[in-house]
Image (cartoon, rainbow, N blue to C red; front, side, top):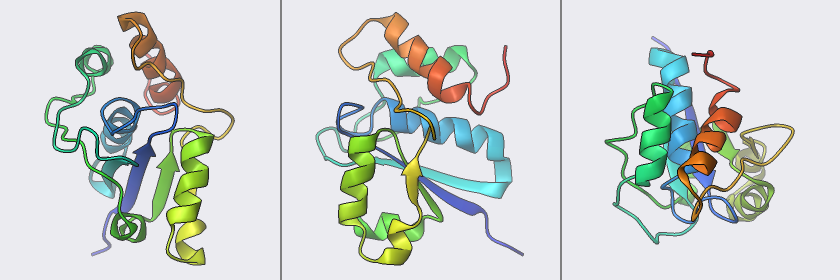
Length: 147
């Protein structure tokens, strides 16, 4: 039996300091769409909120689109998590650049790309509920069917 495709979503930079907003959302969306064919994890470049839950406004915005973030616990990216993944998806260009520097080898660097190929995921942190809902629309709409 083949193992599921392993995907790691990572955030920091201007988007999600510690794995509580955009990368958990992206992981939940990809897990929902991939089902048993994918194993998805998320992480942040910093450990600021390691072990803590997703941001309450992101939990609510994600739930409105059918994604459950209630069980999420923030984690920090490690070289081992980069090696574990078949694909590493950065939420923005600054994260992409940092991950390429952290990658232990060229094979790992080749697995790293942006979650949205043509743009960065917008940063909702410190903004109102509408900003979180817009992130769900920008980031999740690429993978979720319309309501």
